[in-house]
Length: 117
Image 1 (cartoon, rainbow, N blue to C red):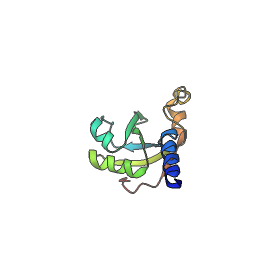
Image 2 (image 1 turned 30 degrees about the vertical axis):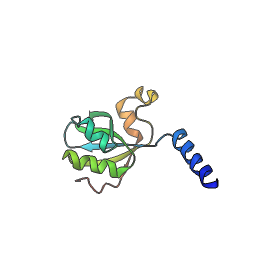
Image 3 (image 1 turned 30 degrees about the horizontal axis):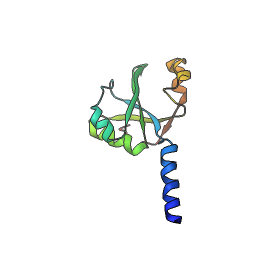
Image 4 (image 1 turned 60 degrees about the horizontal axis):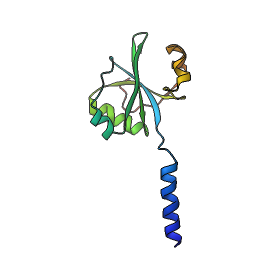
């Protein structure tokens, strides 16, 4: 009975708590082109937005952690120059009202073992 109660509680928590994902802004060497939706689904990565600012190109990705981002870049044969964590929800409507240069202030560079620079 105790095991059944624990299993039921875990099941309820898995439904009630949303899966969490982090957002990463990756600086890349050229403008981002959309990857295959099936590949992105398989790697649990989604593209939030891609943009260019002052000659630099970025793609904002949502993924469970940095390992998924690394696997994604390996799979699409692209080189990352810099990896940043987005300290706010990039897709939040409030963020959309900020200029791109203001939104870049929410990026925090982190160590990147797969980046070329």
